[in-house]
Length: 502
Ligand SMILES: N[C@@H](CCOP(=O)(O)O)C(=O)O
Image: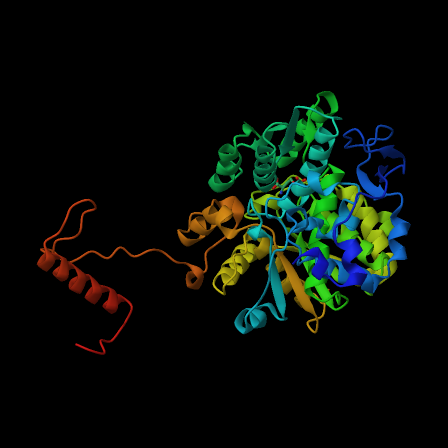
């Protein structure tokens, strides 16, 4: 839709100009720093950083309902920079000029409601938000669009040149970082660190295809993360993990999109997210708090974080009900089908602790819950979701299993509606489906396939004496007819079909 077609009262807001003043703020000691240089930890105390808009209060001059109108009308503009997460420019990147925005088709992912059968299985109505429909097939693209748009801005304003973007990854972050880096041909190259053998073949193929330097090391993600932090402390590289506060800003768009898709009525919702490195739950909490602060929403949804028993440091932390006695202890992870979340020492934990405090102070103790699920529950839930029309990955399965568990434990009530984060496309984790169907899980996973969820292809060949087609060779028409008839008869028998016409 063209600008002149927008109602007069929103027209001046549709194409945002750079505004505001962003600063890094340390979540531990509250020190603040300018954003002109790349910074990932507080130079004073090593704490993690968030980005805050020093002029945030100016946004309150626009009433909440007006913001809703602006964001809704922005959905109709053809300007590419506003097609994705920057529809919410003022909330997550207001200092950026639109021509610095890197848009590869991220964001705007659909909410797909569970059918009646799946709803009954889960125990309450819910929808998956399919972040596997992002360009590199995971939610990380939201954060990368933000972090790379900012890099692009620095490159264009000549504060940076020849950037090497590095990240540690369980497979999704690396795919996203490599994809966005490859788009910015001139200014940026990328290198990704992966735990050897702990990334699926599909995820490994992604950064390789994008031309990144792919480095595999022994150990698990937490080990890769330490190396990347070490590199970022000593060498001129741009760290692209969610420790980079720009990543968090971009991922806040997940909350904004849920709010928009629900007509900004989210108080009755339960938003379910898997917790790995904890960047996602950080962004979701922060996103909803910002919306409330600007009165774009009037009540906060409940947030339910889910972890696997095999990688559960956040769950264990919140198991202690007395905040004064809580101590965060990293855990040693065990093999998990929710491999993207197989993380024992989440870098965003200090952010989560502070944000959960703030969130609960506004919306009550029960407004943020954390539960854990078994590997068996994750696999079964993913396959059941897949059998009901969803492209949920294992982390999506983790959310569904977590929803069921939380209902059972009374953490949430079934008269509400839930939105589950399907963080990536199921195809990235096909290897776990294969292990399940073929009953090949290594004992450490503790997964035993349920017969009714298994599946396998059937090879149907014609009976002895009937020729079969060979690619590249033509076939005698009569022989081909015999092949078709006999093969069709065999398939009909296997599918239990009765012939209706001769
Ligand atoms: N699951 C992640 C782990 C790193 O997360 P990040 O959000 O901190 O970059 C991955 O896909 O690598």
